[in-house]
Amino acid sequence: MNLDVSVIGYLAGFCTAVAQFPQAYKVYRTKDTRSISLGMYAIMTFGVFLWLIYGILIQDWPMMLANGIGLIPCTFNLIITFQNVFRERKKMI
Image 1 (cartoon, rainbow, N blue to C red):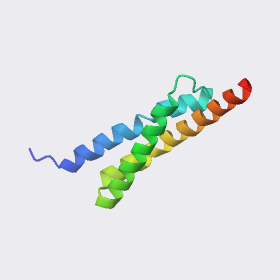
Image 2 (tube, rainbow, N blue to C red; image 1 turned 180 degrees about the horizontal axis):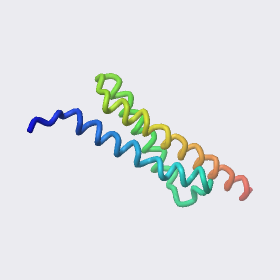
Image 3 (tube, rainbow, N blue to C red; image 1 turned 90 degrees about the horizontal axis):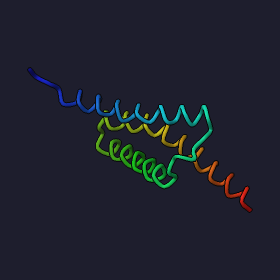
Image 4 (cartoon, one colour; image 1 turned 60 degrees about the vertical axis):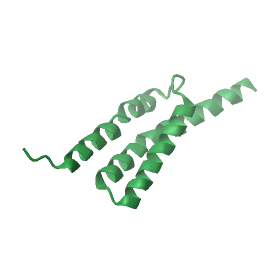
């Protein structure tokens, strides 16, 4: 059996990219981010962005696709979490 290694890359990339969408959907639907760690999502989003840049630099299509797609829900979750944190801080003042 001859398995093309890129198939594993595409499958892994698909799983990691799609894994972010259920959380993004929940945030979109509820606008509730109280249980989301702002620090974790900031680091995660930056990491996904760096993996995307790395994939572009080495011309690795599975890495570029997975991280390009995964960056969308990560960025969405990060933006909504930032907005909610700042909104809560304004209420406290």
